[in-house]
Length: 118
Image (cartoon, rainbow, N blue to C red; front, side, top):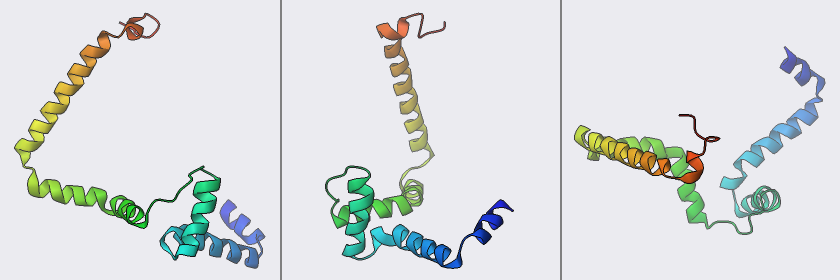
């Protein structure tokens, strides 16, 4: 109800301008160089302090990884890792976790009463 109330209070031309801007802004990193550069100059350089845009191939790889990384990883694992591989990986992770736990017991600041409840 509140959203409908707010929407009805906005001038149609204002809402249309906002929706156009939002669409262009969200697609800008994937459009022509002019859009990419303008988007980078504001969002990355001005707001985040990034001085140099990454090469196009790195941006494309990052986009692909974000879009497909999990799905591609599942396919890769299904093809190349059987259940015994998973078990070995879990055992390795557990050994590393145990070793880390033992090492942390030896750190002086963690031994302090103020940081450990035994």
